[in-house]
Length: 167
Image 1: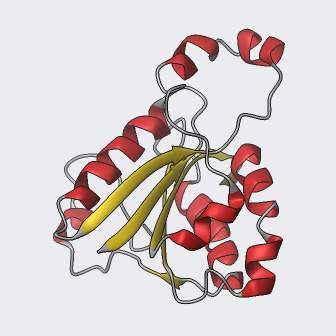
Image 2 (image 1 turned 90 degrees about the horizontal axis):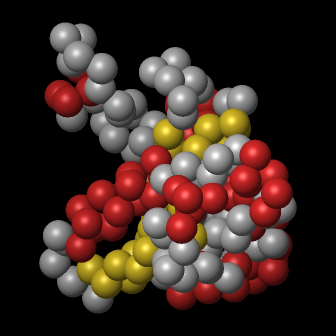
């Protein structure tokens, strides 16, 4: 059995929907046990209200919140985050910053890691988000899995297609 964690942060629900699809796809792999979890929200309630994010976040409030020390229990971790100025969201970064003990113990060395993201528009920095996220995976000793150009779906030019060799 392969234990897979799909771990996400979502402000407005877009990354949550991606995380659901990623988890569904992982569940199609024979022998995979897939958990879907989220990282904690760090913004104050009044800020979320001003951002009109409260209603969207209610949709996934039942999804369990992960604890950093849980990551070592998985064989594969697929991280999902919105893009913020070409980087991962601060909520995800805050969560990852709490994994120093895992790094010291080598708890994630050899685990498979991948990243998916969403931004506000087609040229919102998706590849930058994924590439800057990968430094965390490398520091933890994770095996990074991308999408080779042999996947023809990313060769389309007749429609907007959301994929790249980075994730």
